[in-house]
Image (spheres, rainbow, N blue to C red):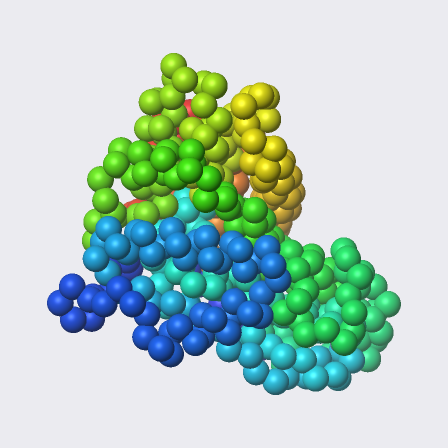
Length: 382
Ligand SMILES: [Zn+2]
């Protein structure tokens, strides 16, 4: 497989919302035994924060499905035996099948699924030498000089015991190692653009959970009533952002209520609307009534926003350079322009966001749903 083919494959993003999956009549809300087994196996294979996150996301997805009266289709993760192309040791490789977009699509194209999130399994790492990449990268035949360079250069952000199963390695460390690996393999800027965009989504999903505190549950119930239930063709991600906006309007006269800020911050944070989330997160930190454990959670959440922004900066830099050097695949150009606008908008870089919004809107290849989102973002005067 050539480098360009890999770039194009990693770009594949279904843009059409496929939320409704009725199988018979109203459908069955309970996953089949096979689906449950796959889900449980995948949960056991995760690190603790990833497990917490997946359970939380699944609960949200479940509540969404209850409203929509649909069956939950859970993503499937399996592990197959492979060999590291650098050190030759055996390594378990993740094979993920994405089956659903139950939780909707964020405006920077992060697709939210019920069950294990595919982005957590797209990058594999050899625990012995730290070689990292997509599943296909483990089929590469590399010259000895490149192998030696990889062995000498790859540095994990945290030490990795060569004897552990790679599921125990933190996902963002795998992305960091894939970034280092791709540098040595000489991958294209476009390829780095997609890799780092995915890493930013991982950072978004980490630390997006709240304890079942009664004061928080009350607000979550209130938020659920503020916006109509998710319909067949609606986007649950957009619904949650609308809930956050309505809650923010409701709390204008009650800014001492930390639980409102907690739910607003969570709903915005889950979809990468970080500039809005940060306003609530800062108020939670300043509010004397905020319980200590909640305060700590939001300190972590704020840190995860900084990590997401680090990867977003890299993604924008690489996509930008791919355009400057004329190396971006023609089939991906319109979507990449749209993404650049979204990235700059989220990073608060107004001039760049405006420039790429204009470029995206003028590009006739931009799919209709992204054109609509681009116009709505433009109306917000980024
Ligand atoms: Zn290896």
